[in-house]
Structures are given as structure tokens and as C-alpha cells.
Image 1 (cartoon, rainbow, N blue to C red):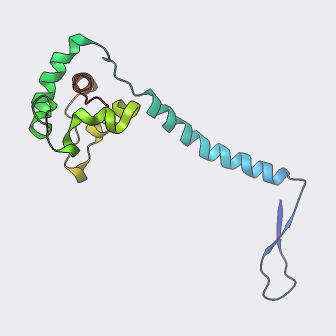
Image 2: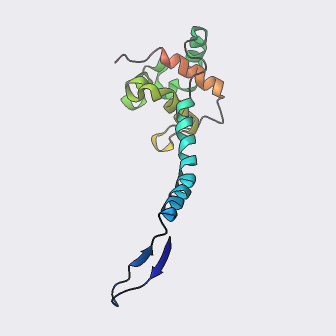
Image 3: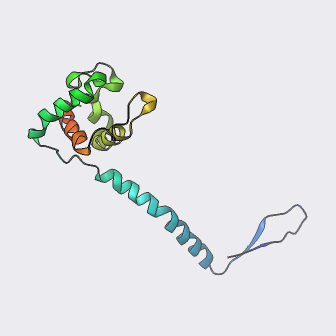
Length: 143
């Protein structure tokens, strides 16, 4: 694509586009897609791959409950019984559906300081986070 500035009147400043058979448009589109798409695909892939490694393991629930009460109970209530809806973790599945594991992991790991949620990734291992989530799965409010 060749751009040239020509005007038929002193006030006309629009570019005069001379086509070269559309190859310039195709090349520009390819460049844009190559730049934008690689960043988008991993983000979608990462969101889809966050899963609880202890899902369905009954042997982890009691340890998860104990860890929850130790680290989370002071804000979210003993055994996750908390009357304040914004802190009621028994509603994770109702709020987030299949995204609940991802939302839990991201919020607990990175915190939400604006909402009073501290960053836990430097304190708790991924294993502990998932043990806690395994317990939380057992106390979810039914739809």
C-alpha cells in the first residue's frame, strides 16, 4: 500500500491511497494478528487450566477445614459460616460457577487489597490453597 498526500483543494487533507492489489491490506492484517493473538491465547488457556489438584479427594477435606479455620476463619467465619454476603465463601459456586477454582486461586494468591483481602501467595503454598478450596467445595450453598 502506498500512501501519498495530495489534495484537490487547500482544505482537503485526506490521504490518497493507491492500492497494490490488496497485498498491503493482507500483510498489515497478518502483522496485527501476529502481534495481538499470541498475548490473547495464553490468557484464555491459563484461565482454563486452573484446576484443583485435590478435587474429589475426601482425605484432604479435614486438613483443608483446619487450614481454613487457621488462616481464613477470622474474616470468613469458622468452617466458612459467615453472614456477610461479600465474605461468604459458601457462595463461590453460585457467584462464579465453573470459574470458582480460578477466581479462588487468583484472589487468594494476589489478594484484593481494596476489599481488605490480603495477598497470601507469599505465606501459603499452592498445596495449602488447594486443600482449603477442597474443604470449601464441601460447604457450597446449593443453587
